[in-house]
Image (cartoon, rainbow over all chains, first blue to last red; front, side, top):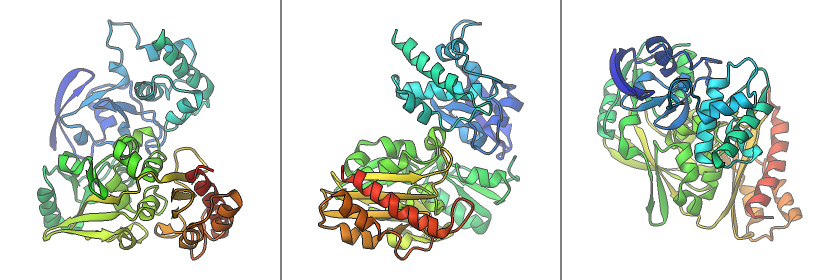
Length: 157
Length: 281
């Protein structure tokens, strides 16, 4: 076992974990943060996307021990406002109906937040390219792209 | 899936990492960004007893100016290579190729040195590194040595790095102001290229370098095309004629994505596109 200490969604946590434990497993099974989901388990689909020290990563492709000393933000900690309020990108996905079954949504939103952080005013093509590591098995991409563009518009207003 | 149990070491310096490697030898695997290694461990295609994580060694990250070259630390991420001002100014081809590696999340974790040491023939960085004449700085118990790109790539997933050695940094001779383009042909978004072409040219055209991805067991250079382009005027017809030579001497694989002769066809067509874009035509 290896001791890790990190910050997850604003709270300091520490645990002894097996070195082989994946970050997504740690978040779900140890911390109960099941908002982050496992989709493909092969680092393709992006459903498990979280932020590690502020940038998006696929948490099925990071070991929990690699997050030692670092800061993780999951979909559950994205909105830092009072209970019940959503992050503007979450709000935008709701407004534009950027989901069908909803399974890919946590990862889509985490990647969209990263994308807009780097490029606050993307073109549609830049959104599609920037989200290429996230798959929607319902193939509901049009409204997902719309949601990201809508969030960018909202941020300008 | 979950990897087989392993012991985890997080050395704080290259010396500590080398000593751990010396102690565990064959039973150990080096972990850089993990974007290729972790899938391999999870699918249990490999089961090292010890994983040595280089993530805590700050000296392996970063990009610096070193006179006639820029030096890229092995643990610098693809994302940082893509965006760094020194890379854009002196090795634009690497910035363009790094932008095409996998997807955004993987570029945030995956490292320049890790990808090159992994030496996947379909990896996006080998061909541009070869085209730019990269020099690989490799540390071992007895000190460091430098290996030219032409000697670095040995075979499929095999490089000149010894089992008790670590790639620490890569020197890229400056190609200041050279135009560049990385033309990647894929069937599915964010996947490995079926074929890709790394082209960089000085002027239009005084000199040209063309690297080929996935056209053999290692990255290759299209030397016949490079020679035909040297001193040529960058016209569409002239470039396409030179690109016809791009597949000379290659021995590409045949697989579900394409037969060898199809890959050679792709290499000729994509080389034409890549060089024209690099030359701004």
